[in-house]
Image (cartoon, rainbow, N blue to C red):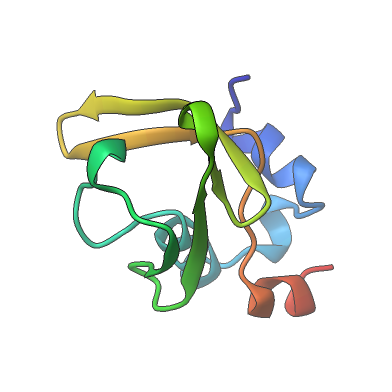
Length: 101
């Protein structure tokens, strides 16, 4: 599943008009960890994001990985500036859920 800029915000019921640059930066940084981690080095538990909140990582049998309530569908994708783990949902920090229902 691939998401473009507009489809991501439709999924979380946001529009470009109500999203400030600061909110967008926080939203993107919530999806990032401070350093690249391949799945072989990933551990169960809470990981602090670049944004400052945390995500819960759960490692299951047969290579299954969950981040909060999202499932990793494609892991360890190398990029120029880090490693990408593709997930099936948009992550929302608790504070974001309260502000943007």
